[in-house]
Image 1: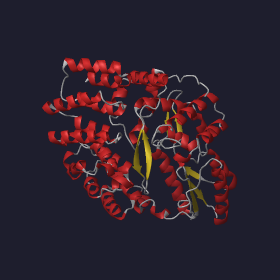
Image 2: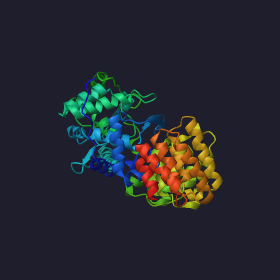
Image 3: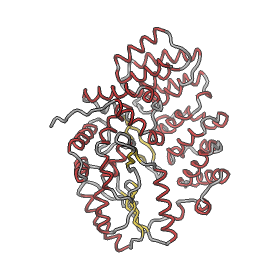
Image 4: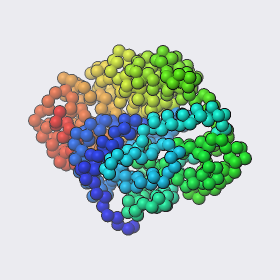
Length: 487
């Protein structure tokens, strides 16, 4: 294999990347266990850890996966990366981001917004979603027939050689393209990591959107007007005859690169367009909290998850706690509307008294089948509600999850039980956490264990010395140890 020049990662580039990616970090399905507080405190040490990984040829660290529910049923396997790997992957994708300029303005999702030469980010999905809603309203007003196309397992079916050809067709320099593709090929060598692009991170969203550029060209040639949201294509005003002809052309084009249409979702005409937005939103452009509570209750019972998402958005933006009780009664919302539920829980985190309906969910015995429930609760549950005994139980649960290979879940539980611990409880958890951190290689687990040392007052000199030594022996943890020592 041809040896490529080493990727250059400056402190300034990594810090710019962290700042630019904040909107994505805030909305991503699987958040960081520590909210990247340690990385923002010492981005220079994060950059040093990333450079060390590049030098050693282990840019992906210890990637792990979790099956994350999809709103319309089923699940997708999200790949969880730690901050040094995110910094490297984002830098590599940044080298090919100008491919976005080749896309039509009717491609709405995961478009690149250039802030300056160093800062770039994915455009807000909320703004793009509003554009789509306005278009849909116009289509309804003009009684236009809309056809749908959907790619089957888009991320997982992307062939890296095909992606490489698409990027080259955009006129990009060879080196950044070859470096990115070589890295992605090495990621597929890890056991349990899906083929194609890793789901859940900002760089993959950009690459996944660009990968369908040939599809855009086929649709433009055969049909003309289209609107694409990642791999969901809408064709306003298309006749049945033209739609059937287009299906054939698209199927042939996709088959050349190993992809195919999801025929269950590729339909003409689009069904249920009138139900996608509640009538009161269309009529008044606003939803009041009392109405949102009613809609949340009815939609949760009837399984209308698009309405659930909109009602949770309204209640969360206004800090209305009445959704907590409804969520506690409908555990399935964590699986059919996981990201909206997670965002809502964070928005009402400060309302301690209202959390009782959800507190018992932390003690789910059947943890294997409910990891997403625990991930979102661990991120949002007010730690002031936890008793000393509950903290110890959650720590035991985290250790058990780690031993059983649930690597993604463990850091969230470790962070929850140690954050805000005081007095004797803090001392006990500190000792357990510090003993365990020397036994694990996973960066995110190590970071979450060190979180426990920030709680409960000042550290003894011996612990501070050991922390400093740990940072020297584990460069990837140095930004976290410095963050802990600064507290």
